[in-house]
Image 1: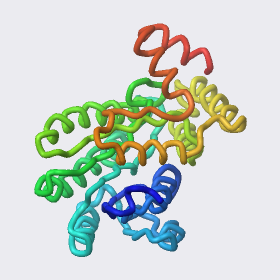
Image 2: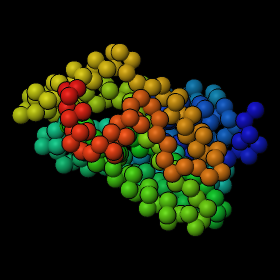
Image 3: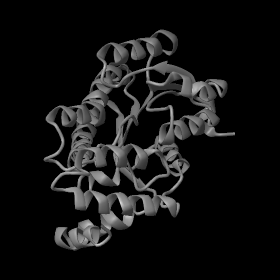
Image 4: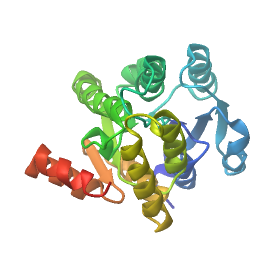
Length: 277
């Protein structure tokens, strides 16, 4: 029996309809948390409802959805004890080939939406002088890959935003935790490759785009990723900890790639990345 079951802390997790979000919801439900599962595709969370989860239809970019979700939690359970900002996606394509409107939407989903949701849950946490905010970043918040300029920009921004937030909220007993997944077995590859080729498959960046498509698909076919449960377990460990670490890196290549970038410098990392394309 998980220790947390006696406490029944209330968790709100976004992007819970698939991948890391769904696995995390299942893990936390199994550990006795009350879990509100938010995503646009409610029909894909019926399995979570059967396990005791509470599905909420939410588009992270819509103010009315965010306000309604937090109000629902408030009316039924008082407020959110643990916010897991997991909703996000990776938009690839050459920086030059990507419209500014598309770039803005990448930021709306990966940064501004979660920032607004965090603002809405904070009053309850401050009043209680306790709480945990878990932001799902990526190894892509510390490293980078070609044709991922806008995606990596959002994750680098999320890292800095989270660091500042951690200092601001420490006085209220609220922890801010960053999770940095590596390569994970989710639909990320499919969501990334097709739009990338639509943007850059026939432009001045076509040769590079084709190399990246081939390398990505080859890695995926070889089972090139860790299961989402690995990240779910890291999240569960972080929110159980009395004094959680500021960052948890987990999943294939996360630690080695960040190590190379940090200790060997940009030029060595550039060569390592381009050698596989």
